[in-house]
Amino acid sequence: MTDAAAVSTFQEDLKKRCSTCSLRHLCLPLGLDSDDIKRLDDIISQRRKVPAGQHLFRVGDSLRSLAAVRTGFFKVYELGADGREQVSGFQTEGDLLGLDAISGGAHRGSALALVDAEVCAIPFDRLEGLLAEMPGLQRRFHAILSGTIVANQTLMMMLGTMRAEHRLATFLLDLSARLGARGRSPTLLHLPMSREDIGNYLGLKLETVSRVLSHFRDQGLIKVAGRTIEIRRIDALRALVSGVLRH
Amino acid sequence: MTDAAAVSTFQEDLKKRCSTCSLRHLCLPLGLDSDDIKRLDDIISQRRKVPAGQHLFRVGDSLRSLAAVRTGFFKVYELGADGREQVSGFQTEGDLLGLDAISGGAHRGSALALVDAEVCAIPFDRLEGLLAEMPGLQRRFHAILSGTIVANQTLMMMLGTMRAEHRLATFLLDLSARLGARGRSPTLLHLPMSREDIGNYLGLKLETVSRVLSHFRDQGLIKVAGRTIEIRRIDALRALVSGVLRH
DNA sequence: CGAAGTATTGATGTACTTCAACGCCTGTGG
DNA sequence: CCACAGGCGTTGAAGTACATCAATACTTCG
Image (cartoon, rainbow over all chains, first blue to last red; front, side, top):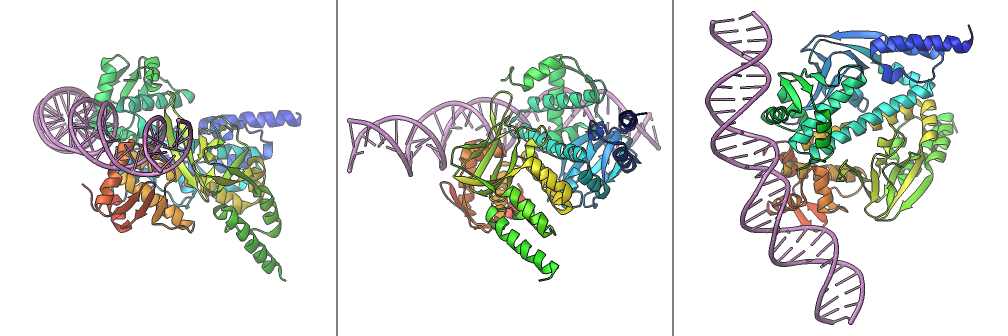
């Protein structure tokens, strides 16, 4: 077996592991050699189950590990000065949790499992060591951090300028795209969070969320059955967001 | 001269350089040795002037360098699908520009100098190389990226839940704190941006910004003279934000 | 089944927007 | 020097999108 073939085999092996571990976006395609793969594998092989309703971490917990979501759904929220809750995001398969804790060393928010979930724990100190030695991984990690900044800015734009309908449409399309990218149905969504959580995330009240969903349903854009939503006319939702049907 | 003393001297030297270069937050305190300092110094020593009204970069420009603001004031904004502008932040002395471009390699927004400005350019490929070799610098850089995420989440919370008065108060306090941390007056603010820019950033219309500022003025919280604002009762602004005077 | 949490829908209230008029400042040309 | 134009900011009046309050239905689970 040639070296190249050996590397290739190892990469295939890693791909499988990462696939089951929902770490595709971190692991691939990095151009790793076999040693690198072993060491990365050691680090990311720790797993942890989090039952529905339990926290993966809470505000103030010190950062030991980042977590990559393998299965399930998390809600990350913060508490304002006056105790009000603010949902800052929903994480599912393939998403990383804990990035906000890198600055400061302690978690800024709490991560609650909305359904039974499993995560891969990535000890941060060991990851830092690997980053220094693996330029491809370093680049990928920076891209993830930067990508999180971009995603937040997109949400900011939404909260700053969009009307309720646009917000909901954007939310549904974003979820659809993320689930689709992970091999799930992009049209049949099982939202594990309440209307109130959605509203909180989008800067709306739960009644408004409900009303807008009903409105979409009446227009034939979606089909609503409790927390299961089927997107029927994704093109129309996109048109709504991009302003073609504005006003 | 002992090694320790040599290092200390070099750090002092770096501190001076970085101070003039507004890079204190990147350079210190890292525990660098003399070689490291030289190499970092090489990288960050490139400067560039940007006259008022000109762009440092525009959407789509490929990322060559990050930029640390030395003097002046920038507005970073993006264009939505329908062409509407969305201001995503104001950067001044000591702030880094271009972090959102790390993922994707191209700038997601445009950076416009609101007044004559000067920046230090930090070639990104060379910075990446240094990060791999300098653990302290790597950690600091990750902290900055993560800190940007946190700052954006704070803004998100603001846009999602706060009322107009709270937004303006938060905006003024944030600006005051940032300027104060860089040795400028925390109470006498020269805002180089228009009311429209402020409103855009905060998710409000320019008339609302004007009204709220007038309201603050009538309450004796601030003194307004065009784009110069003097904070007179910073405690009252803080109380407003923290919800003590809610409703 | 009953109870509690969650979702939908309606009626009313309000914070912010929109539309509009006017004042202030800066620069430009006669 | 004054006249006038064009930006920017302030203030008022009317409109609207969303919040709030409230009643009813659905869903889940002991």
